[in-house]
Amino acid sequence: MGKLLLIGGLVIAGVGLLMMAGLPLGRLPGDIIIRKGSGTFYFPLVTCILLSIILTLLLAVLRR
Image (cartoon, rainbow, N blue to C red; front, side, top):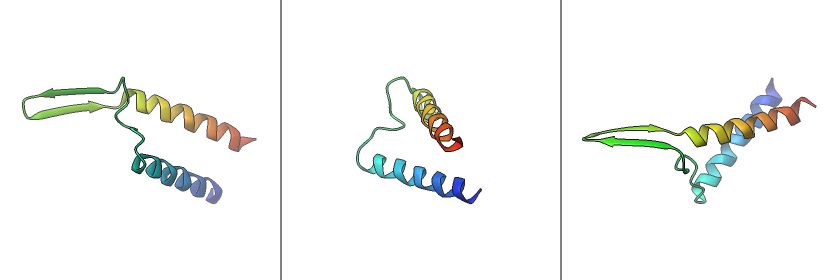
């Protein structure tokens, strides 16, 4: 469990560093943004799919 938490923390820190470096994570083409009046609805569809694929591959490698 400790190993998984450590790796998860490193992955989150790595994503944070990439976002600080200019990676447009959360603003990818295909993310849904609806602005009406003073309200905004945002659903990061493509970002969720991308993160799901990356985490699936990472966990598959860790299981071996």
